[in-house]
Amino acid sequence: MTELVTYIVTALVDDKSAVSVTEDGDVIIVKVAKDDMGKVIGKQGRIIKSIRSVVKAASLKCGRNCTVEIDE
Image 1 (cartoon, rainbow, N blue to C red):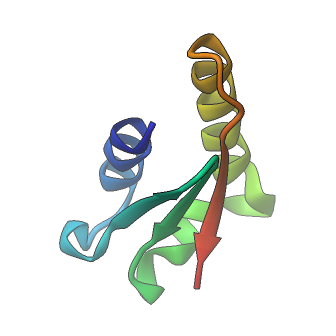
Image 2 (cartoon, helix red, strand yellow):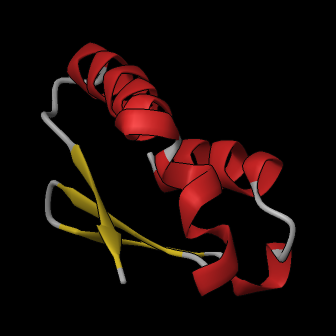
């Protein structure tokens, strides 16, 4: 799942070297540069909601239940 989230998030941000995606059990933690935080969250949280939907669908297909969190 971390590869999927890394692929999506690096496509969205400007500073690709600051992207860090770690997995802690069923929680995927995303860290990005402070300037790119708005690009990952989106207007009214639409982009992060979409990322969470994609990850949830992919994880259920694998028999897991993963969630995505953004670390500030």
